[in-house]
Length: 490
Image (tube, rainbow, N blue to C red; front, side):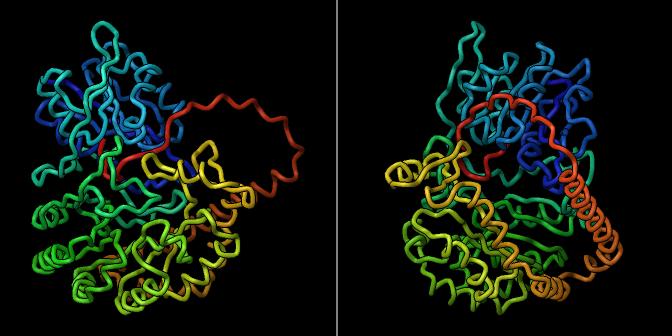
């Protein structure tokens, strides 16, 4: 039995960080540890004034768990871990830690183990006293100092009975933009793990060892029971594909309607859901606010090479169905695709407008392990990977592709278009959310405009000052590219 456990999400707040989202995977780990600990705290640095574990340590602290999911600020995270007292058991997990457990065990001498893959079951086994040599997916430091790497853990579905430890949150989570809160509470729910599709630019369908991860859903009853227990108005489903089984979606909607749960939901979906208008009608009635759909490209050749399973004409046909419903439509696009010209990349904004899309999110093409992009780039003359594994070419530099994203956003988000999206939102949102927004949105917009204005003034002033010699840049810590399903929890 542990006396005091700290579960740490070690990413500090930044000007662009999503401070509104709770660390759901870490809350699952905390829930799994609860029967084995007298006290547990979940610490999210994004909501703390001091991004350090030190203030939360107690004399009785005997386990610290870090969730290392992103390749940002790794030097600061490493330094925070190394500042822990040597006698405190320290275990790491999360996507980035999973990719290279050897690095973390060598760079952090006080780290006892790294949980590779899903964390809640492995942590429960460790806490129950199981021999570390028998814990699948565990990489650890043996008593004699040797590094031991156990065989991978098989992918497992989420336990219907295990819910995230939301009661351990130190602050509520609100929808924010640029660090400014709207006052609307949000939460995240995991309804499934894995992805049944195999798009060639994406590694969600495989685990960090390259083994295909089957799609595994939770029961509709457990999902609705969890939603019923949250106090958030807006819920993001973290499922890679929420709409994979349309009849299951109807079951979830029927339960939400029968229980009169008045909330809104945002989900990842595939275009195939347009073949089921009956499901879309149910989702509309149950309060589903937005569908996030991967379109990726405006070119048939690119769609075919990606293995998306549809053509440009089919995209147009299916969006013609989708826009008949009172649901916001967000389309994901990728720029930098192999073989596409700058003109084709810049066609994204006009194409999205022709589809009737409300929102777009444009990403740069990035190589993930087991996606096959590394090999494809190596075989394609004129194409390369930068140090962050973004794809660029002799014709379009990495910076130019990054600038194209901003150009596409400016072309798409005209003032008239934004006003239309706001009006559509007003027609969709439940009256309770509108009432809360009426109290908070004016203040939110005022603060947001003030922050943006202050930022522009600072930028202008900086151009008026003489340049100072730049400080030397410390060498970067190499960590392999992110891998595995978006649902790896820790």
